Image (cartoon, rainbow, N blue to C red; front, side, top):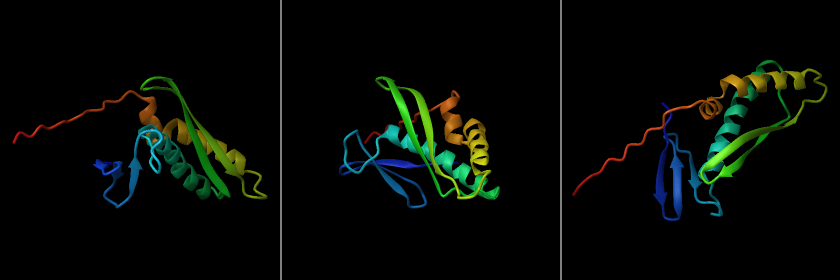
Amino acid sequence: MPEVRVERTGDGFQASNDRGASVAIGESGVEGAFTPVELMLAALGGCELVSVEPLTAQRGHRMVRLATRVSADKIATSRLGTITVTYDVELPEGDDQAAEVLAKVAKRVHDSYCTVGNALKEPMTVEQVVPVTLT
């Protein structure tokens, strides 16, 4: 089961996993930190890329550059509208099939295989547990 820990630090918040990775979280405008929404967008772009890259490479088409830009329309306070994932790709020189393979793989990943994308598209339950300790 995926799990992260988010805790308050001296100057904001930090998310970490059990493998030693961490990222700073803060409000918009906090230097050196991602906002929670930016982390969600990064998770979506990262999910697509870590799925697309090996699948295209397995088919013999390793992209020279493979990146995404992920943006969201803010439609109201605490509400996002459309999230757009735009690929930034440099195809391998002389590979006439790379663009077609990339397009097909990226569509399948976006439509079906990216767990983050699927979570954003489908209704799901998010539970909160707030234990209270009395002293």
